[in-house]
Amino acid sequence: LHLKKWLNERGIDKPIIAKIEKPEAITNFESILQVSDGIMVARGDLGVEMKPYDVPIIQKRIIKRCNEVGKLVITATQMLESMVNNPIPTRAEASDVANAVWDGTDVVMLSAETSVGKYPAQAVKLMHEIILNAERALEFERDINFSRPEFIDENLFDSMNKGICAISKQINAKAIIAFTSKGNTPTALSKFRPNALIIAVSDSFDTMNKLSLKWGVVSLFCADISDRHKAADIVRKIIIEKNLVDKNDLVIFTEGGLKIINVRENWVRFEVLQ
Image 1 (cartoon, one colour):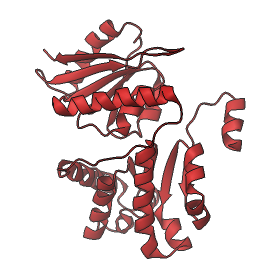
Image 2 (cartoon, one colour; image 1 turned 120 degrees about the vertical axis):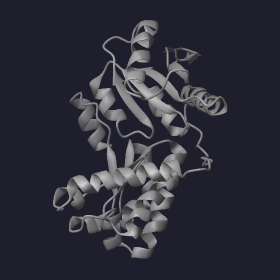
Image 3 (cartoon, helix red, strand yellow; image 1 turned 180 degrees about the vertical axis):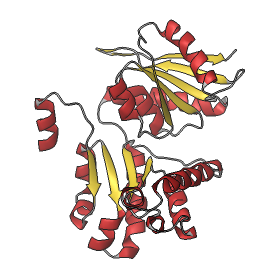
Image 4 (cartoon, one colour; image 1 turned 90 degrees about the horizontal axis):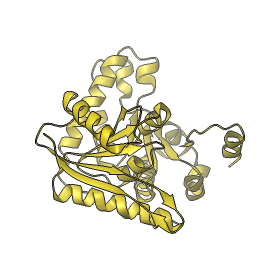
């Protein structure tokens, strides 16, 4: 809270990620989660402070809880530790990364592997391949029980985006394209883990940077998104050129719209790309 106040007083709009590394943080986890924008599970430090066999259970519980409230969760440290000195990871490390993906983590993070390791680029490449393979093998849908938001407008906003994600699965949409200035709509969509790629189209590089850690989100810059129809024309060409989607794919366009007293508006459009 002191950090948030300090940032606000200086006009700094940056998310706060809380690093969980001590038993006290586990004890007070709910209160930490409530005031943080995201959580980092520092497994290496937790393994020093707590019994090693407790860490996997704690990791899974933290990821599950962050998923339930729709907050960012990073799984970090000792993921491919052997690659500090070796060009390939152990099979156990590959399984560790894959299981973090299957548990629902938003981000997996390398530390010593890329800061002091002998094979930093190879470590990134292999982690990327493990993640892609794990996601391709994910043949079941995780049923995430989201906690009820405190304010009614948040509840409506989440419900609308949850509905878009549910529809995208039913109609097998390849992408959900969200126009956004602050990143709220892509963030809400990411909570519900749609099968479709989330493409955030923003006029703010700062927003794009924030969204880079969100699950399933790819960001594109568009200088003017005030006219959604003109912006959509530009986006159609870009996403096909970048091979994010193909012609004849079904996509969903959406925008959070205005929030005024007693009104919450979302714009949604379904389209087969030509």
